[in-house]
Image 1 (spheres, helix red, strand yellow):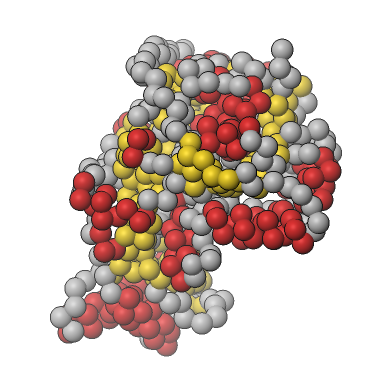
Image 2 (tube, helix red, strand yellow):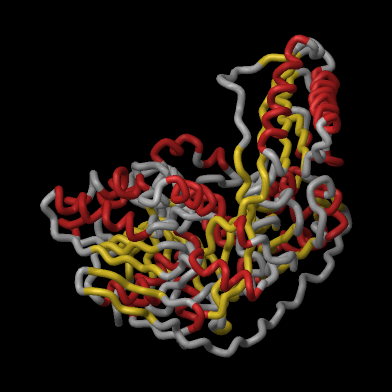
Length: 598
């Protein structure tokens, strides 16, 4: 039997806390520490940075904050490091890290995985004119392309470890690949070990958002609030069959439970039976989550259905400009005053645009934060006496956005009373880098591994024919002698996020016998009532019997998605909170018995 692999997750986004690396090193006994820095928004930011400075375009604080203060201890413990901090410039990231290693007199070996960056091939790709994989939209104008990156997999990372790398830096790979690559290296998994690859990918998915698996963004936040300042970062103890245990360093804050791990499992996975990664198509519908000790959860049951022929590829392109500001109002009729102010600012700007024969804004967003504007038809509060008025606009010309900022500010002495705010200089227009996702055949991407021993091309793993998922039988509609309406949060945990312009909401039943009631209550009509003011497209629901949970997809619900949206919540981070607050019907006796047993 090959011993288990202990992997610590030290970063969930670019900007995560610097305490994670020393905390995990202090815990001891780790084989690998992984870092995930990249998201679609991050790639857009890094592409802009590289356009200004060819030596930029990577997560610089990986070198300065995570590695530099801890390299000596990393070397002493022999912990391997895997990170996608390379962003759109992994070579520069590796060069900076190697310089720091030499400066400290260490001998750690750094390997770089490249090949994801397809930007130089934009002319060739534009000639093929692939369509957007989610919406079918046409390929954007090639002269507006900022970056093109294929989402690579885990086998090149494993190859780098096989060649003796102490630290592996990649560009854009899927978030879970940094963990799966370590598993492939450690256990010797092959392309056809589908269930193991799916299990390792799920372990990576749990780790990829750092403390979101250990109490961060948790529905029952009161259970962890006293330990948020010392929250523990997650550790996965992965076994040779692909199952794993989730724990955290002893003595740290936070919580590891079925709820914290289950919320993260459902986070941003789309269809849970066809979660497509470069190395395996995963089916998480029968995954079981079991509390096996204090701050310990065992996860098993992931299935692999095949290996895809293509890499998901994300392109960012210039799509005009956006800008906005938050103006606060307080006092009687604060909502009405705020709306009047927003209307006046937009009308004044539009009048000037018309006089200049300039086009109207391509999008406008006005949200009154504090007046339950996020709740739409589910609003219950009386008129608010203080609101934060967010007004944002998009236009093809930066000058039009700047004009709006000027005119809105210029209304300061002509506004209804109660305008206030804490702000510095007037916000400036910012360029929009919109997202366009499509598929690239694997044989059209050359993946290169560079390390101290030289350079080698890594062939894509052979594809494995996909077995269609077997959809589970849906819960039967329940009946009861007496019903009671309660907020969904009494029955379930929830976590939400985004993929482009699609919102994902995962709902995990607190008890398995609550799930039929949850499924019956959260039908498409109920979901549409809650999110009708947001979503423009299809509503999909998926059932996961193994974990007594469901996943909901809201298409066209984010105003274009995080890289271009004007919404206050362009990544759907709070959508689960809206759903958990909505009333659902449940068997009164079942609810009482369930809560008495908690």
